[in-house]
Length: 488
Ligand SMILES: *[C@@H]1O[C@H](CO)[C@@H](O)[C@H](O)[C@H]1NC(C)=O
Ligand SMILES: *[C@@H]1O[C@H](CO)[C@@H](O)[C@H](O)[C@H]1NC(C)=O
Ligand SMILES: *[C@@H]1O[C@H](CO)[C@@H](O)[C@H](O)[C@H]1NC(C)=O
Ligand SMILES: *[C@@H]1O[C@H](CO)[C@@H](O)[C@H](O)[C@H]1NC(C)=O
Ligand SMILES: *[C@@H]1O[C@H](CO)[C@@H](O)[C@H](O)[C@H]1NC(C)=O
Ligand SMILES: *[C@@H]1O[C@H](CO)[C@@H](O)[C@H](O)[C@H]1NC(C)=O
Image 1 (cartoon, rainbow, N blue to C red):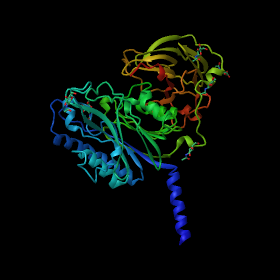
Image 2: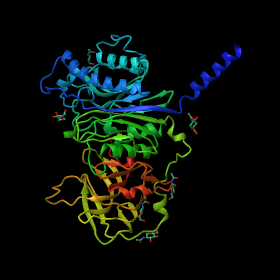
Image 3: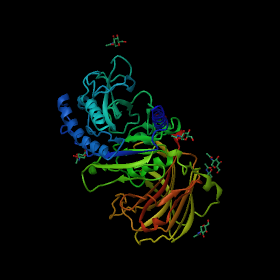
Image 4: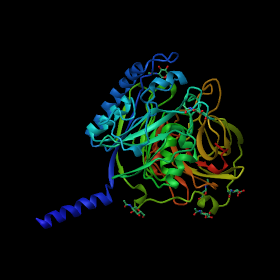
């Protein structure tokens, strides 16, 4: 009996100290039901009716995920009330969300911090299904209007991500720092918050949507806090060729060497779709769908500590580019714009070739073979080194191989979503001035190229043999020079 108890003790403590090596994550892409009236304020009860309609849908997804063994599920930014608000119309949707240090299970003690029906319901759903639930709601914090910075209506409003653990306890609260242009109803917290928490399946960090473009808190959570997995509620508007949700989010996971659980909103007229469970090795599983207006659940098993894998390495992004000489830039070098950034381009005119193209401090090298070019398609190597300014001010260095959109009557300035041209092989590299470089490959009709490319320790993005079957839209290395960003 003693030895039995002893053995039991040993095995329990082994589980507690080492935790799980793998876990199952879920993300739910949600077609949020929007408020009908965005001009006149509704009552708190009317606001709750709308929020409960959305939570009804989220609850089904959470139940389904839990029944399939998921340990954690992420739901999107604005997934409970939508995004069209003034300060006045926002107010009835907000709750006071306390700091997690208060150790609160809303499901067991709903009134402890005032009226909190949304937090209570989310907490109960987490507890009943024994699953971590990540959601996005609005926090309100009263302030004294005679203090500097306090809004005239006497409250700070925060776009807030919350996490309830599998007992329904509030374990994380994050106030979004980098607000997007149409979020005028919310306030920016005084400092970027670095929110992390430990679980038996790794260390987690959390941030929201637009935050991903900036150093704080996004990159800092990985660099300074060594998180394993990022929880990422988002409401991402897709922008081709480099910033569709699935490509830039998967690229960030690869470039930072972490898992990223990205749950997007779904609204095709707003170009919002694209969710995924991304790891340092693989871009996906993911979901992208512009043909329906439905939500969608994704599950995947992943490593709790991706950096501890024997195959994990951090590439030196400039090593290869610094080790070779320069090729020719080609004959047809020209300037053109992508998302308002002025790139230098060179056209790929032969079925194979080697090119070097530079802008300012960045030189990009491309080697490719077996380009089966379709007659009216133009492919280019492009380079950009500068401050991107549209929607966000962020300094970027980009090397890209892409199907170039020729603006004529036919395409009429629309982004290119389809291609027919295939490559047998390509290899792209650049002498980046940053260790933050995000590799992305996008196939025709907005598909990711899982298993069709790799990043080498010397910083080359190279194709694998299966790429030759797939028409290519773009292959890119997106570098971020956070030090050169303007002050927040
Ligand atoms: C607000 O601040 C003013 C000036 O500091 C002070 O006189 C007043 O009592 C404060 N009001 C409240 C409600 O704390
Ligand atoms: C998508 O968003 C637009 C703009 O906010 C809205 O008018 C439309 O009703 C939404 N579509 C659906 C299906 O909810
Ligand atoms: C992961 O690797 C680090 C450093 O090699 C080590 O300290 C840590 O214990 C490992 N974690 C797990 C859960 O294996
Ligand atoms: C990357 O390689 C370059 C040589 O091209 C070297 O100078 C640099 O220190 C390396 N960077 C890192 C982080 O190892
Ligand atoms: C490109 O360079 C590689 C070596 O770096 C060479 O083997 C190949 O023949 C070159 N291709 C062309 C088309 O110049
Ligand atoms: C990249 O290479 C070009 C050409 O050799 C050089 O002028 C530039 O300084 C290099 N950039 C960096 C950051 O080393």
